[in-house]
Image 1 (cartoon, helix red, strand yellow):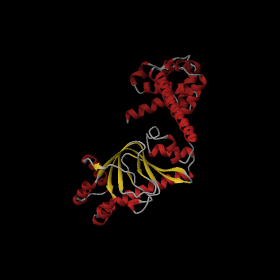
Image 2: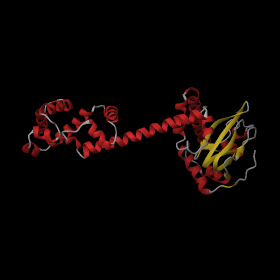
Image 3: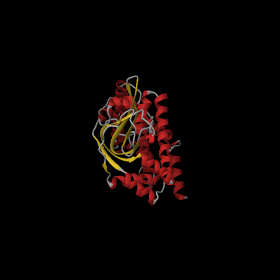
Image 4: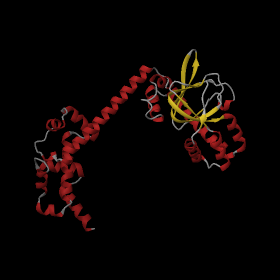
Length: 327
């Protein structure tokens, strides 16, 4: 094993591990005491080797900060087997508990702070503490479930699915970790990963632009009541929003599932329905006056739009409101 300089672990760092373990199962005072007695700490610069292939792993590690990458060599090619980050436990998989030489090497892919527990002490604690056995069984079970999921997605998932799996399981690390290492982990070429990432970023940008356009559209139509303009046209509204008529039409169809006329008329009808809620408004204005004030150019267009939106005539709608208010 590469020469490492271990030092006494900070109590606050051990507290963090103990708290995580207690989330799985209560820890006895005797077990807690042993944990605090045996944890040591280690700091690795980027690129430092934690364990070499063929060495014996002497510790179970917990990552306080940074990231570790495990790799094995096949036909002189380095294959990334896993990448672990903050708040994860790490050890040799093939040589767990120091039972034999490890088949994978582990290196720091960025400056990494660890605390470590000796495997020799770990084995003794399994015999002495039921609570520790139970906790470790749950940890190993979770690890193998994650490993099975990772193995499944890499075997049967396409490149895009593998990319999204990494984004989900290692949020924020696509920008932190070496690109070629992520590509190796996901069993794809770096060029493929770069292409998928670019497509995803463009999709996110498009989604953000669409959201901003929807907000601008609703601000103009609903808040600023642009629908009251009887001369409002697709081209006019598109000009206000600073986009082409084709883009506006596409936005309405895809996001609101309506064409321009139906969307504007819906805004007008919603405004009229709101006015109808007020008895004072019905006393001072005719339904037709409300319609013209909302932007309709003709009585027939209003009645047609109203029935399309509500399923009934304006008069029937008013009667329904009156019945509700009397009940």
